[in-house]
Image 1 (cartoon, rainbow, N blue to C red):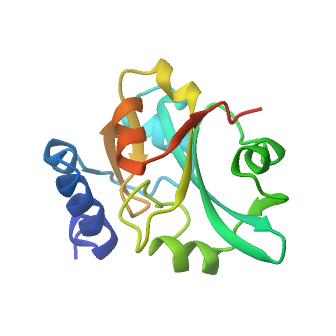
Image 2: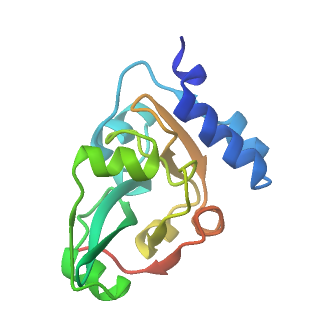
Length: 166
């Protein structure tokens, strides 16, 4: 099975088409090797690391309950967990473990796309990504990416723009 036929990549392509962005689905690129970091993705694509939209899943704590929080951050910096908690109205956030990520996204760490999940996720989108005319996001597999824009990423995810980095 090629990476383009991978079920998670197919879900991302379908979600892009459903969102009225079939061109983005056609733009999914399968890279020769897995790119599990923003630096690896930037090198493979020949773009600045800041143009990589990292999909980071956190476990947001609300009293006794927790919920997934997707932070779409620029690859040029780290997400500030205290800032994410403040923006989400959570008492705290922590990086989610692989099982939690797979349960809520249907995808594995290293290839989590901003879309194509079983249910919509609360999403924050880093305003630092707005500086790039084209940004690249994972497409459901560690070898797959797709091009988008800051405005389209907000629209696709239903996310809220915010300064996320430190």
